[in-house]
Image (cartoon, rainbow, N blue to C red; front, side, top):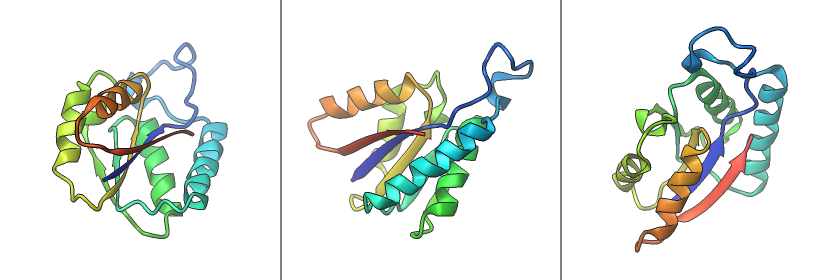
Length: 134
């Protein structure tokens, strides 16, 4: 399996946001950068079969931008395994259930994605891992 870890685009600053953390949106610059990062992913000839996103608005918007740009028209799933406070092992368990030939883009948050990368790199079964920041 190939797995790309894709951090959500630039979001409104926490200090400026008065709503729920899960609802904190991307900035216009964040949307633009997410689009540029998604286009860069395609230039690397990565063709996702699955896009998996945190349910937080900023991650989901980033995932939808990615899906729109992908020529492969990957399936988009929203998963709690990509929440910022989720145990990275839960994400690994979910990914293990996907087909071996899958190319999965996980759209989420830091430091969760970095922690998940650490777990993946320590596994005995190799995972092709790429990390992008929108």
